[in-house]
Image 1 (cartoon, rainbow, N blue to C red):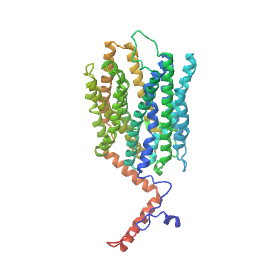
Image 2: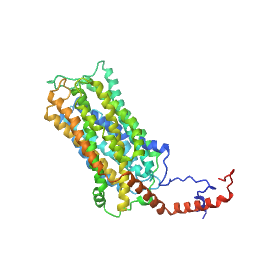
Image 3: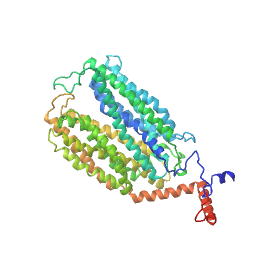
Image 4: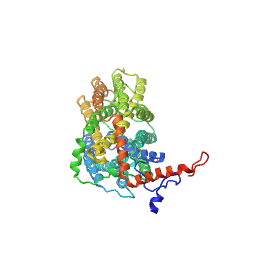
Length: 526
């Protein structure tokens, strides 16, 4: 009886702060910031790999082109294969009261991921190509594996912070903004490190070579650049560790009774339920074209700027894109709050069609137009990063109501795996097409056929994908009204399943009624 009275929350008794918060918790600003910082490590490291892996392996590490292609391809395939395996392990993990279900995996993966990332940018002292191939392949696969061990539980953590949909959307907005900041930090840190070490050599970087010249960087310049890569990777790993500690220490896992999975059915049967769920299939149907469009624009932006528009450097334009995406995050978040997620995604993607069409009309030498379009491209990237991810909890809530079970880890596993596979597919298509038109990296002048191909890759493919994605988005069934109805039902479920909470609310209402007799206009007991 004493315990029940101590937990009572009435106008006469102050609420008792508990170690374990309620599933309907309103997240504090500190918790949202710490959760948002947890999204930086993935973008911080993967962005640098995406931009620098080819040039590092070919020119600095002097790995032959065939082995370089094999490292990238095998690493992508390995990454996609490990996603469902790691998702299964997280799915089967039993939650502990003190550490939760997800954070132990994040703690386990942080230091190995940092170690393998630094090892990847270390240049081994050997001239044999097969040894270099084995070193970089093992380091790349290990890093992607441990990064998935970190990212998969972190992605699922969205639903374990609170059951309040508004608070989850706010936390997602913080995470998306932090991820864009991570992209920007990765570019700045690695670019600054390479620039500083390049200045030690006493001359500027080699911009391009003759079309018939197949030589790589001189040995002394390769050594200097390898040190620059290694120092940049070390700084990025320090940021990785700080952000990981913030999310591990600064957030708490909570799970409502209705979301607790008892694992009564096999994993494969749960997977079948997820991948055959109608709203989830429609979500994936518009997600794939949108991701393809963004990857096609990002992957070909640098080559298009250099060879089709004649820009001397593409780095300032990329920074403009990232800054624009970072600044547009709060704008799109306000649109989500006012118009709903589906309408906001429509509003964000419709301007992308005239944007990419205008890329096909920019004449050679008009560099200033590219910066204006870079601002619009950052806005499109922001809405694609923010809204589809925040729609996943809505699909999971709808699945929970219809199937009476929740498989959050499986949903997020397939979401991340699909994004990775689509990104790899886009890179493969782009590389194949450029190989067909005989594009040579590093040359001073490219043929008109290559310029036309780059213009097609950055305009036609993204434009078609966006139109297809908008059609499937129109068919997406979870509107703002459906989302609010689901949220109301889940709130009723949560209160009905929590007997202690229901009894406390009843006592609170009774105590409020009794306290009315002792309230006066000038005094209220607390």
